[in-house]
Image 1 (cartoon, rainbow, N blue to C red):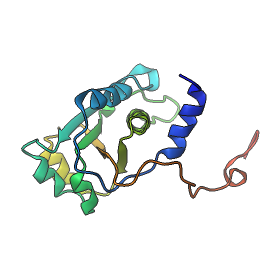
Image 2: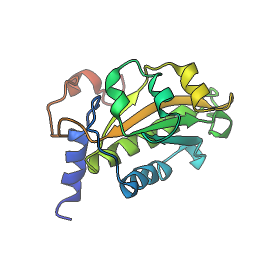
Image 3: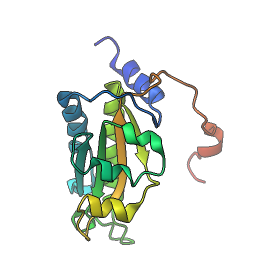
Image 4: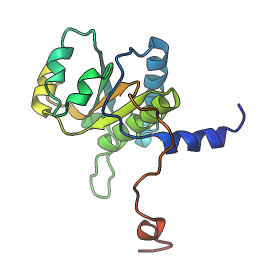
Length: 178
């Protein structure tokens, strides 16, 4: 490996939300590496309060799941991962009772997104979908929260490094105090 630091930052800069996918399946070994990255993610007190439901285009309920999306581009995603949080298994901060289930699931999904980008796979964290319909289709128990539907697939446009529209550091960074 030439420059692992440089490669890591290249992956960060080329990551973007992909909403249109090629009609090409993701190889099993690639998908397994992406999922393994989520499994290995950090979580508060190592509680790992997450579960993932993976559905490819061949699953009998995939057409039904496609109906929960509000944008058509996601319909061709070869894989959808439902990332779920189990609050009862999460670490809770004693000072204010904050439950870290969503934080932990977010860390795992973010790491899967970066792993997918490294593999040339595009992703989109989908938050705008019919939540209740998705819960029913995926048979998610009442005590489990559906955090996101993550779509994965080979993007129509390559994952090149592109300038991102982000606030300048001067607007978000505070040194020592607010």
